[in-house]
Length: 221
Image (cartoon, rainbow, N blue to C red):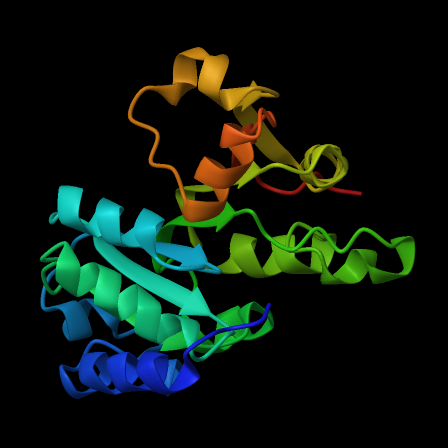
């Protein structure tokens, strides 16, 4: 992704960091996120915040939930922080520049109530399947940090990735519900918060795919 105006984004990043809302060493807070937020509210994380509309809006609408936005593109977090400030988001949103592959370094077992994957890179080539955020290795990471009743919510415009994800969930003993191949014309569109990409793709007439999944105890071999 080409990011324009890096200097401006870095300035926004620094502002949000100085306000204590960007953590560059999330591993220091493993098992201590409730102390950081100052409450025992549920923790929801979004892996890949993009420009931040989704997680910022959620945090604005749900002050009783703590949100952590994880984004590998450092500069993008400046944009997310700016969006959060525009919406007047309280202290229930924290951002961190990090790689999802290290999720177990950031969160203790059972510390997270929900994970959002929105329009993740589909990595379309077969040889890159292991990089997809619903590949089995990533599902093991999610399973480890989620509470027993925790959930993963996925949205994508890529049908191949969606079908791949459904197969991965099934193979790894995840219970799936609210599966739709056309979110915006489904019963589950009510209350849906669109990401910037979602608005763009749906405006082009592309269907949006969505599923909720919950890890069940692994079957014995």
